[in-house]
Amino acid sequence: MIFSARYVVASSAALALAACGGGDAADPAPTDSSTPAQSTTETTSTETPISAPAETVEISVSEAFAALPEPYKSADYDRGRRTYKLCQSCHTLNEGGPNLVGPNLYGMFGRGIGAVEGFNYSKAVQDSDIIWTPEILAEWLESPRNFLPGNNMSFAGVRKPEDRTAVIAYIMSETGYSSE
Image (cartoon, rainbow, N blue to C red):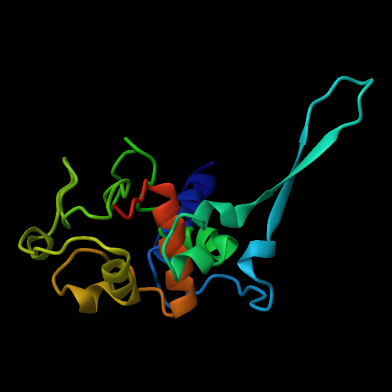
């Protein structure tokens, strides 16, 4: 029993460190870049009475990005969702979601950095006058430590530009982004 508890704690710590950008973990699994994002679909079945045939509805996951400006509109949804898994151990995206190790990201675009109530930000973030835009987030995600020295984010960054674009599009679509 003691061995099991130690194993769980050690495994949890290793997973948390990997999720926060240790080493090369910032690269999500490769995707087939020859397939455009618009061709990706998910199929769901609807429940119907036994006398009627089951209906299949195809939903294009790229519809989630349809209202976004370029280059985010053309980003790969699945790549963005996968890349966001690097962020989810520290951040939530839903409205009213909790702060974790990092602040909740809902409504971040157009908001000043360090503005989430109840989150304890570093002095560097508190002293900054940055307003979050997709372009600023792209610079931040490339290397948070280099973008704003002295911030507390231990994430190493997202090296591949196409991963950054996709994860930003995913965050935009999940956090109530509006270009207005």
